[in-house]
Amino acid sequence: MTEHHEVLVVGGGPSGAACAYWLAEAGNDVLVVEKKRYPREKTCGDGLTPRSVKQLYDMGLADELAGHHRFDGLRSMAFGRTLELRWPDHPDFPSHGYVVTRKDLDHHVATRAEKAGATVWQESEALTPIVDGATVRGAVIKRKGEGGATVEVTADYVVVADGANSRFGRAIGTSRDRSLPMGLAIRGYYESPRHDEPWIESHLDIRDKSGAVLPGYGWIFPVGDGRINVGVGLLSTSKRWKSVNTSHLMEAFAACAPKSWDIRPETSCGPPTGGKLPMAFSLSPTIGPTHLVIGDAGGAINPFNGEGICYAYETGRMAAEAVSQALATDRSALEAYPKRVREEYELYYKVACAFVKIIGHPILMRSLVSTGMRSRTLMDWVLRIMANLLRPDELGPAEAAYKAIAAIARLAPGPTPGLGAGRQPAA
Ligand SMILES: Cc1cc2nc3c(=O)[nH]c(=O)nc-3n(C[C@H](O)[C@H](O)[C@H](O)COP(=O)(O)OP(=O)(O)OC[C@H]3O[C@@H](n4cnc5c(N)ncnc54)[C@H](O)[C@@H]3O)c2cc1C
Image (cartoon, rainbow, N blue to C red; front, side, top):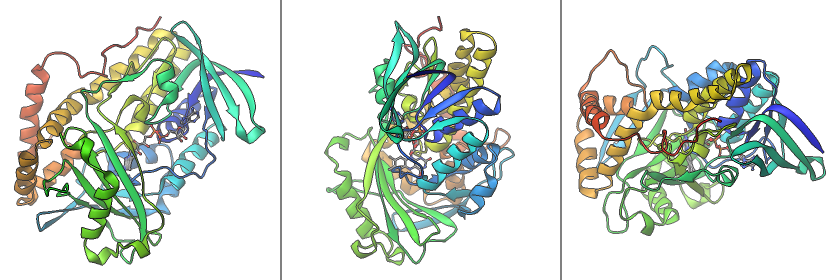
């Protein structure tokens, strides 16, 4: 069996479903293939910052979000100190976030894309790309839901949105730049009496067996349905990264977390699961003659805080705009996608990469965190920087430091790898 669509999107997570929504909204013929059936679990902290919430509002999902747990800010804890930091007022973003399990969230966005006119095939896995030299023409899809039928789908453009493992992406030639940071994280759900409080909590002083502070954080995110999402995330910039066992780290974090959360083996809702967080656009090339790579498949996660959902939505949206333009004109319009990505993130991610290198040193990590935790004003600014909610019209102490590092980063030679390096020109 064969069929043709203007656009084939491989993967129906945040990046693929958002891309499909914006493509369909612009009147294009788009097919998304998702190997699982919604609603499906995806290992995640489930935390949506104001940046993610804005994208969801833009997709018309305010009513769906209203049924979930809304929060006002971040409670930051380390070295015996606690700071409650509200989301900042920002002209472009709401000043609240949500915690929504991915089981619900990804279903909402895929349903929205379908309502906008996208065709969504669930339980349909892109097995192999159909290629013609460097040009991707489509994919062979196995439709488990349709008795395991195999369909050859050809398309004018293919969007790769198959997540952090990105087997499809690798099959068409993307590869990771190992000099750029990567995260590892693990999470589990617990029943908790504090399941609906209006703060998400982060612990900045997680330690390895020797007691040294690690570059990463532990989190407790209230889900609002009787459960909390508890996890730890770690950066690859630490020399000790390979020797750290995330399951042990999770157990140690759960045992030391404030008792009032009631995190115990008896309240656990199941064994924790983990995953990789490819960061700083570490996967490239981001485009080929007829394809684009978005979300985790392109390594779009923010190295400052491990947030990936909003960057999946944003890169999905940027890719949709470039593909719509290409459909209306010609393939060269795809070039707008890496250009937009560079304009939007290059400098910010360069600074983030410099920052994560610094916190890879335990002494520097410790002194930065303990200095920050002594000043609410400083931590307010740090929150803005880490959640990418800077306001161009304001300057606080941390933002001044950010600007100073950014000025140096701007002078550093070469583009951030992944944001242009090794990119194939559109044919
Ligand atoms: C433990 C952990 C905690 C995290 N916490 C947060 C958080 O709190 N907030 C945040 O913003 N980010 C968080 N992240 C990052 C976030 O989960 C990702 O950045 C985000 O899911 C990326 O979306 P995506 O659409 O690119 O990929 P994915 O969400 O991985 O979606 C890819 C989709 O493609 C499908 N697929 C894969 N291969 C194929 C194929 N061949 N054919 C068809 N379908 C296919 C998969 O089934 C999946 O549905 C966390 C990550 C981890 C591992």
